[in-house]
Amino acid sequence: MIVREFEEDDETRVKELFILGMNEHNINKQIHPVHFKEYIKMSLISDLSSVNENYFKETFGRVGGFWVAVDDFNIVQGMVGCQILSKDGCELRRMSVHSDYRGRGVGRDLLNTVISHAQSQGLSQISLSCWPHQHDAIAMYRKYGFQITSEQEVGSYGVKVVFMNKSLSDA
Ligand SMILES: CC(C)(COP(=O)(O)OP(=O)(O)OC[C@H]1O[C@@H](n2cnc3c(N)ncnc32)[C@H](O)[C@@H]1OP(=O)(O)O)[C@@H](O)C(=O)NCCC(=O)NCCS
Image (cartoon, rainbow, N blue to C red):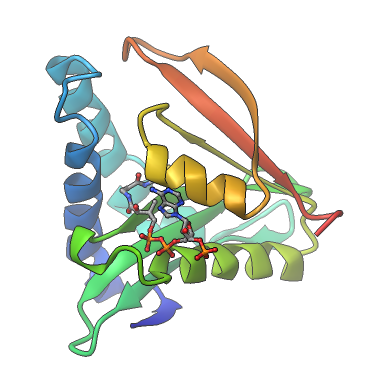
């Protein structure tokens, strides 16, 4: 599996992988199905509607990015985005690895790609948010130096959102 920069032709598969990853996390209906459907819909028409437009455009003098992990057939099996929030910080978004490819270091490679990119852009912080029941992701982020900064109810999803942060100055 190799990690490479997103290409326009990956867009359909990226959306598919996002839906697959998210659906796994609502099997027990922690989020009301109506709100969950709305969240998926909003995601697909917001940043994922155009990855090139929303991740690679220069913002605050910094450039974000989006990377995919591809198998031997160039099929996207993992992904992650880095969106610039300010001249100092970015948000790690849309991290997902197909369930058949987990536990092999793909998530780690994607995470390290974002960390290296953020450092190369002179950023000092990476933030992210996830749901409390995304245990695998939270365990991985903690292992790589992210700390929970807050847990708050946001919007009408009926569950708290976990906010995490990694300082690059002590990396
Ligand atoms: C979170 C996710 C991306 C991890 O991907 P992965 O390819 O299985 O992760 P890796 O195999 O690279 O593991 C990376 C590290 O996290 C740790 N880790 C992963 N899952 C873990 C778990 N359930 N418990 C404890 N540690 C875990 C691994 O031990 C590994 O540590 P190491 O690098 O020291 O060996 C994957 O589970 C996933 O796509 N989940 C569904 C989507 C999701 O929740 N996305 C997050 C949105 S915020």
